[in-house]
Amino acid sequence: MQVITYKIPLNPFSSDYFHYIVIHMLGTHKLIVSLSLSSQTVDLLMQESGCRLEHPSATKFRNHVMEGEWDKVSLCNEPRVICNRMKFLLLQQKYLEYLEDGKVLEALQVLRGELTPLKYNTDRIHVLSGYLMCSHPEDLKAKAEWEGKGAGSRCRLLDKLQTYLAPSVMLPPRRLQTLLRQAVEMQRDRCLYHNTKLDSSLDSVSLLLDHVCSRKQFPCYTQQILTEHCNEVWFCKFSNDGTKLATGSKDTTVIIWQVEPDSHQLKLIRTLEGHAYGVSYLAWSPDDVYLIACGPDDCSELWLWNVQSERMIIFDFFFLISAFVYSSASFFRCVSSESHSILLFLSDHKVYIWHKRSELPIVELTGHTRTVNCVSWNPCIPNLMASASDDGTVRIWGPAPFLDAQEQDTLNGTDILSSHRKYRTES
Image (tube, rainbow, N blue to C red; front, side):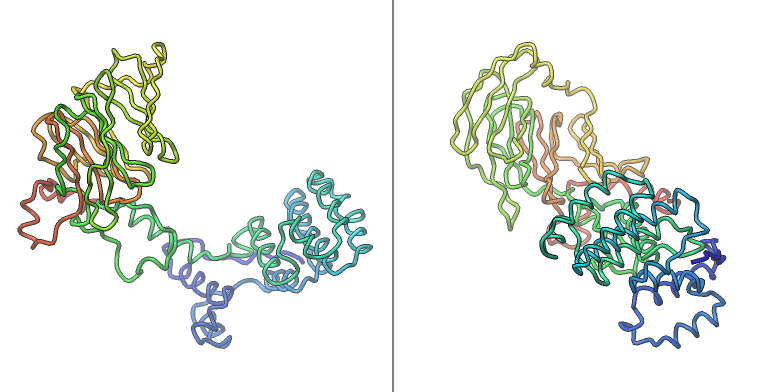
């Protein structure tokens, strides 16, 4: 194939650029059938917009690859390095298809006479040569991790080949979907109250409206107050599966709480006793079977608990305990909600929640009467959060209860964003 550059309107703000991408989507991703459009409709779109789907040479290139006409594919205008990479991919597909069809001699000729002379990716060529020993096609597919001869593998080959071609020759595959997905991700990233993992699927959102999360879904309302500790609560941590909460206190106990799956209410399931000092740090094992606890900076012991059997092992690591030094409550502490856009800062008896794009807090949580020492965000329930304080309580924060709007605004999660509307309008 002789590559002839067809000029695509590259200004992303021009109507021609949008027309081109829409036409490309209709023409190359077989949406014509799903939208009940005919090929004449696409031709009419191209005629009226003045944008062509792609240059005829690109169409021939696509057709040759999809039909398996390997000898008709020409890359004479591509740079040598790029040309060798593309040739390697094409010949690899050709070689595998020969093997699947049982044409061992033809496959051997491709390996020796076409792939090896390229002197490219010799390690892969050695692997390919081993496939000659496959006794049947299913064995070949399994070892090569290849789906076999057909439209599926050739489409994937075409996608790889297009990464080496300039957009002016052939527009990258699924370009419109990529742009729409980026638009959705940008909206979610700028949403002040969005604190769940981003879903890259376009099926989960509507493109008819901008994405906006309600503050009522955000964990800024007191849902429950846990008062079982009899002294300052220094640490709290949800388990990795989000079903349990561990709290450590100056009263030398660790309490394990169960999170009810439906109501998200917490109930005490066991109290772990036997610590010689107050508990200032907790960490769950990856499988949530074990819990490690340590005391303040003058404590040289670590306690390893089996949460299920309540068995405890004590370790004395005097020289290593510095890795678990508890930060002084007089400093600000920052907790990041994983995979989210939310940051929490603790100071005095309040919790301030910031969005990473805002210069001012979006929410101020009040309710504790003394210093807040720790905050833990549930890793599996985005709208559930716990805070531990020197007032001896653990507060569980959740979304707004089923109250009218006026009552919700008077609850103890105070929205301080209303006085800073300038950020939302400017951003």
